[in-house]
Structure formats: C-alpha cells, structure tokens
Image (cartoon, rainbow, N blue to C red):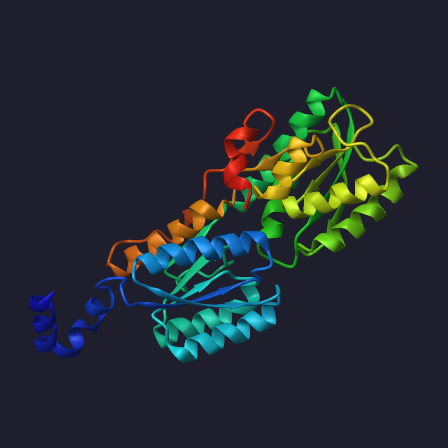
Length: 325
C-alpha cells in the first residue's frame, strides 16, 4: 500500500481513480429506501448494515413512506453531501432518474437494491434485485397448479397489486398475465392497485368478494406479496369465505417469502408463496458486491437475488425459518 501511495503521489491527479477503489474500509454509504415499517425493507436494511459495517463501511439510512417525490429530494440532498456511494431502493424510475444523472455528473456512484430502474443504463454501477417478471410467472404457475389439483376446469381469478405506476408491480403483473394467458380455462376478471398497502388491500378485496358473490364467487386471487395476501385472507374471513383449493373454496397466492405467508400456509389459508426476495441473502450479498466495487473488482450490472421457486406444502418446512422475518 505504501509503494502504491508514493507512486500515486508522484503521478498526482492521474491516480485519483485508482485510490478511490483501494478498499471498502472507511467508505461512507448513504442508503435510501422505503419505510422500515415494511418487514422486507427492515430485514434487508439490518442484514445489509451488518455486512457493510463488518467490512469497515459506515451506513447512513434515509427512508421514505413510499413517496417518490420525497425520495427524489433525499437523493439530491445525498448527492450534495458527497458520500462514497449512494445505495438506492428506487421507489419510482421516473422520479429518481434525474437524480441519478446528477449523481453521475457529481462523480457519486449509485448501487441499486430491491428494485430496478427502467431505462437507467449507465447511471448506476450495479443492481441487486429480483427478477420480477419471473416472480409474476411463478405466482401464476402456483395458481394454475392449485386450481388443477382441486379439479377445476374453469376459473375466475383476480389480482391485487402493488403500485402499478411503474417499477416492481407492473413487471410482476406482466409475468402473471402472460402465464395465465396460456391457460384459456382461466379468466382474469379483475386487477386492482392497492399500492402495497395492506389495509387498502383488505378493503379492495372485500369489495371484490361482494361484487362476485352473486356470480358464484372467485376461484383464486393473487396478492402481490404475503402482507397483501394476509390482508386478502382477513377480508375473506370477514366475508365468511372458506379458503383452500377444493371447488367452492378460494385459492390464495402470495409472494415475497414473509412470516405472514408461512403462517397462513401452515394454517391452510394460503396455497403458495415464493422464495424471494429473501433479505437474509440479498442484504449481505448487496454489501458484498459494494465491497467488491471498492476493491476494484468487476461488479455485474444486474445481480439477481435468491433463486426463485414456488413455496408450497411440499417444501414449506425448508423455507419456514428463513422466511419468518
């Protein structure tokens, strides 16, 4: 290190770039995320912090209550403080893209976590995120499998989603709809945007159940994460709807490998969830990739999170502990 430092001093400005990537120790990170009241974000943040701090980095976290405008302001403020890196969970591609452009101009590298940015090539150094299209496809496959196992030959299904303005939810819905479209015996009768908010999800689900009660009810419904699926289950309980995969019962599919999903599956009220995102893997892996970046190693533009698979009764116990965050 001493030889490298003296050599760089002799070359003056020409070696600033190489010094910037010498090691992760001492690097200051600003972490911008959604609210830590969200179980996924809280668990990710904790796991990320532990790994980053162990590598000698410091983390200053700022949160937003899923408010893209507030996050855009936080991003601008962070750029002005010149951290060694901004670690960003983008709540809105459109809202953060101007800030990403300013960060690049200011020489502040950005690493994306949890979600991706649409059309943001060249504005960030790496991404640790879920394959959301595949997530939607697998949710549909779980629904199809459950309906078939229950002997259904025709089905009316619905989906309650996160915010469809942009980002994660549109990609998951794209995959979900594309897979269902290959099954002509299944009709997707309604899609409602609940903006990831469980109380809104419960209210919307109740309205959907009332609407279709005179038409024989729904056969299945997809809540885009397990917290939303749990809200759907609460609405179904209130409406006196029995859950399961037999004819006449409501099949509930969730996602996101969360404690509520595991609990509801163990109780027989939720048919399936998905194995990711999994904060215990994603948080440390993101910190590891950032350490690699500061060590001068090549970092992929997109590192897909935990390999996705459907969690059903067959493999529930394998995932129960890891998903109970």
